[in-house]
Image (cartoon, rainbow, N blue to C red; front, top):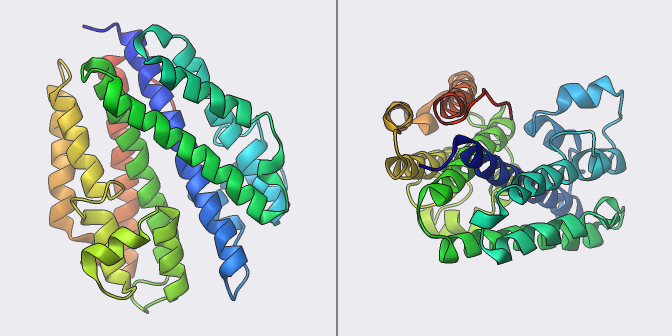
Length: 305
């Protein structure tokens, strides 16, 4: 079996790459909203979605566009910033280079090189969008190389498990923020469109459901759709598949399968407003618990995100 330390480094490489990708998508959607919307963008929203509100407030920062962009993109001392995630992903990848296709390492180095430029926080929003699209495209290329050239053994399945866990967490965070106060009263169509765009899910939503932006339909799609790669249900199901391919996975697999069953049975799109918020809070807690179980079961010491 692969050494625990190697599995740990692959796991964290994958989580940080996915976190960077998710953050870039969220900032891209918020920036695009500012360009397109009839109403000003809420620049505080991405800070809260990414769980960085306490750190942001502790620095006594104002939620202006330039301040938030610097905090989320370029701040090396903000552990969830794009810069910090790329640096952490590269450091973990560096120690397991011999297990990775050369093109994966080169792609991660490309991300690292891009972050040496400073135009990601530039007030020229279209230039920022180009920067974010480049980050996302590079990461998607890395994922494609992993899918197409890395043997589907333990290294691959640790990478996949980490990516899906990080992705499920982000989907729940975005949905929780954008459903507050909106599921029962209909909310703003623009708000629901932005929710889908933040997860690059608008086109797939329309193809899948062929309906207008009905709040409960959006919640059902992002929570329960079995085919959309960023839905919580898709992530949980494929986390189970990854665990089935890993040795000694029974305790973790049982917990993931239990959460998957509970998630489907809960029918979150049918919940009233307060109950939905509470359900998402509980879901996020259980996803964090699964991370803790993975860490205790496979890695030598408990890990923190």
